[in-house]
Image 1 (spheres, rainbow, N blue to C red):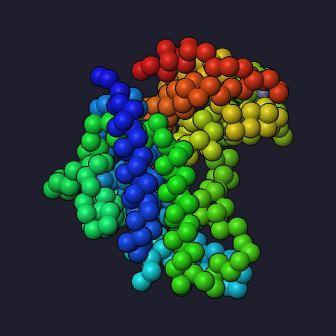
Image 2 (cartoon, protein in one colour):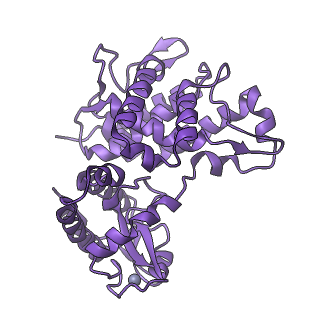
Length: 351
Ligand SMILES: [Zn+2]
């Protein structure tokens, strides 16, 4: 299939801008929905004009992901409290997560309690359907169906032809704008005035996710890499091993096990927020095959916790490498050495 024309790409961006500039909404859900659709478009792997079905449960899962962190008390200038995400009563998704937080420690634990997790997703999905899904495309009181049609499917939406492509291509732009507006909205809500004050780093609190929990995957990653660093191939000692996001967290937030690798602390540090060179990509693909083989023996909880399906990680990598190729960024080789990305990643990452 062909890719969308330059004109339709521009039109799409103008519509997104119009949606974000429309000041009619009282909750922050619309921003979360836009970020969710952009993230899911990356994960869809669509690279042409095709339409894309998005399940409501997948959107709900993204909502839980984003709002989990934001449902913790924010210790601002005057007193610590959960920030309001709505100019009236607190947003219901936040209330749901506040009560889950009182019961359980981490999102990973919540996810592995299968019954509770799906009940939570159903409730969040209902809110998404009733609220932002209906309002996202309303600009100045007029409905513009430029992303998806408003139909009666209770379980999902279909992104119109070209929309997944646009959201993938302009992911950093769209999510960056949405997060800026999201933060501005939170600052405007009067109930947050005392909590925010003027001093704290609100952006870090809202959007920089906690990287700590990934360290729990170290034993499994080490085992399936034979005890070696994915990048330099050297043996990993006890004190110098770290878990690294293969596709950098700054590009796309994906904590699933296939996107995590065991590496030396110094290799991890040298790589910074860059993509790894194609030699590393090749080893990563092989490593993920080994990971899938060993995980057939894992428990159901392990699988839910680690998001073991290698498909999303591969599609996210295909997006990240395709983008790096298009905008000609360099990729990390070793130490301080980088190189220009060749075209081999396409065949490595094709399914
Ligand atoms: Zn290393």
